[in-house]
Each structure stands twice: as C-alpha cells, then as structure tokens.
Image (cartoon, rainbow, N blue to C red):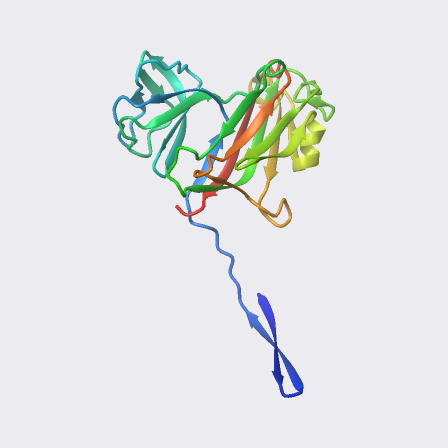
Length: 263
C-alpha cells in the first residue's frame, strides 16, 4: 500500500489530503542469466551452424578445448554456457542441448571454471562479460554464488580447507574504470561481506568432501541496494582475481546470477 500526501494552497490557507493506493510488486520478465566465471583460455569459431537441441558442435581447427572446459557461445542478444564432455579432434560433445541456433563463424570462448589454481606467481583472472553481444545489450547482476570443496575440515580461520591466504581473492567490476568490490583471505571474510555462509561436513558433502557455500546478494535495499550493471558497449566484466596458490583445494566454482535489462 502506498500513501501520498498532497498539499494544496488556496489564498492564505493550505489543505493537506492523503491518498492511499494499493501497490503490487511484480517480478521482471526479462531473461535470467546464470553463468560460471571462467578463465578464458582461448577463442574459436563454429565451423558449421548448430540447431536447437543439438548436443554436439564442430569447432574450427586450432583450438585447445578439453573435457571439463566451459564453452561460452555469444551471438546477437543470445548467450549460452555449457560444459564439454568429450573432444574428438574438432567434434565437441556438450552436457546441455543448444537453446539457440548459433550460426557458422559465431565467436566463442572456452576455459576452466575451476578456480582451484595457482595464482601466486601470475595472477589468474576468472570472468564473465556481455562484450560479444550486440551494442546496447546490458546485464544486471544481482547475486554471486561460491562453492568450495576440500579434503580437509573447514572453519572461519581457513580459506576453504587450506590456510588463510596472503593476498586473497579480489572480486571487481571493470567498465570505463576498475573498482574492487571486496577481498577474501579466509572463510570469515565471506561471512563479513556476504553473511550467507554454510558449511557441510564430509559425511554430508560430495564423495566424503568438506564443503562451504556462500551467497553474496547485491540487489535489494537490505543488501547493497544496487545491482551491478554490465554493458556490452563498454565491454564490462565481472572478475575474480587469484593471487595465491589455491591448487590444494579440491574445487572452487563461482556463478553469477541476474537478468538481461531489456530482453
């Protein structure tokens, strides 16, 4: 319910009246997005176009795609990420059927989504961006999800199940300039920036592994109060930078969630 006060002046007198309206909150109907951050290890072109519901594609020769990689297809206003199951030279099998008929020559990127890498000597950047979509295609990022598994027990003093980091992972957005959102060196830092943190014991986790899950929300007046808008025109990126050795972790994955602004 929305209440509006109006003030009307007549001569030297003022009258105040209150108007009450029913207000209904409706969710947006633009397309949602849910995408892995991944380390871009190369690009390729489709040798032939694909059809909706295909679960294989042919890449132009010269790629280095391997099983377990994320491949990211972008064309016009459409984007799709999927995981590679098998590579037979240039014939690639993926785990999800195509939901758009990407054309021959459509530009695509690939790389690992597993953030459990060594960034102690050379920083490793995991990212996602609408840069290859049409000009004017924008995303609003509303949430970031983190999942870490490890052989060792976890607590707030560690990062996952390994000792606290020296430099920490840095999450940032780049557009016409760079701005850092937060830095995490230990699990307690996740709690400080996201609050929504949960641990699973090895008896409950996958294959007897310990795990931690984190949900960082941006939109909403009780959170950041703003969404993070990424624009294709300025090649904006959502990035996570690794500057420590995380390779002792079993796995670490990060997804971002949000929606297209106008499509």
